[in-house]
Amino acid sequence: MTFNEHLDRWGTHSAKWDLLASPMGREALSLSVADMEFVSAPPVVQAVERAAALGAYGYTEVFDDFRSAAREWQLREHEWDPGAESVRFFPRIVQCVAALCHHVLPPLLGRRPRIMTLIPAYGPILEVVERSGCELIRVPLLLEDGNARMDRALVEGALERADLLLWCNPHNPCGRVWRTEELEFIGRAALEHGTMVLSDDIHADFTRPGRTPYTPLARAVPPLWDSGRLIQCASPGKTFNTAGLEAAAVFAPGALGDHLEAAKRSMGLHNPNYFAIPAAIAAWTRGQEWVADLRHYIDENLRFAVETLHGRLPQAVVTDPDGTYLIWIDARHYLPHRDSLTAACGAARVAVSPGEDFGDEYAGWFRVNAALPRVELEAGLHRLVNALTHPPK
Ligand SMILES: Cc1ncc(COP(=O)(O)O)c(C=O)c1O
Image (cartoon, rainbow, N blue to C red; front, side, top):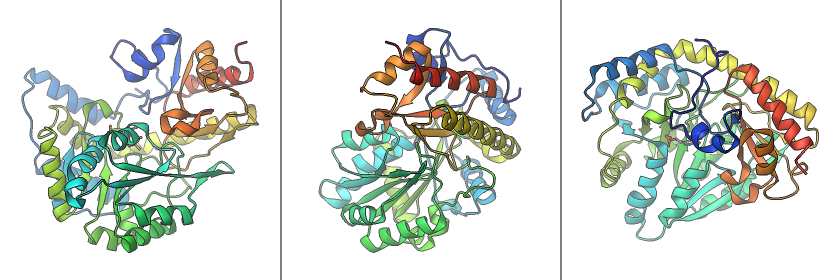
């Protein structure tokens, strides 16, 4: 199977298709939820098939082979050694954030924790923080010339107040891969103000040839890692299209790792899904070549999509991402009312992720997912452009 082949995921209980695209009918095209319209790497598919063939799906545990696979991937792909001791299993990164907000920070601080994040940001993580009762400090990214940028004074001011920074690299939805000097700025400020940092690097494997390379915050700022106040999160979920199997590696040193482990048990997350571990190990030990090919395919898709959107929606601000497979678009010029996007996309039968999913203030923005066969991307963009330039009356 190549990246050009069509994959039919209707009728699989898919969030992207059976829930979100289904109101538009079976003719719909979806550029929404961040999973890919590609079959996973052959070693991953084989590992899941082998596990399924057994026919008995009992309780599963985490062993050293998972920990060394997670560590080796970081070493080989990202030139960073988290050390074997720091590797902790979490089913999902969102749950790791929930563990921090509900079970680690409140007893540690003895008061309501203050959690800072750059917005726009991945919605379910914002929701977890808000539902936990922690205070959420939202620092907007600036979008200029199609590139997201931090306002350093704002970031520094917020870091001074915050107990925890939720950092995202590459950033969803803006696609920014943070440069070393930006990471150094964040690391220095966090150290200075005693702020704990969780770096959510779920999109780390999606960078583009010739563009800013991905650097883990822990590698850019070793003193931050050595301080025991940095959590690095990795996952095969986006890279290998295995989000539904729920396996993530959370790298957290020393006592912080122990706190997270205890919090995980408080949440009843004490052992993984039967398929999670064999899939993650196969991905991280035998998936490298497949990912290299995928990266090239996505790069071309992004190039094509950004060109098309620039050319055909000249009044929109379109990011040209260095990382992820996502494009963040300010289309307020074409979307005069809060519900215009839903009406236009519904009529054109194309689904995208609405801006409000990333922060209430982003009505009129949306995110496009470019991880699908090129002809389908072309067709989806064609529908999208028509939807915005010829909206329903
Ligand atoms: C930045 C970011 N973090 C976390 C997640 C979800 O990760 P998980 O399924 O491991 O909770 C996503 C999914 O799209 C994401 O984009």
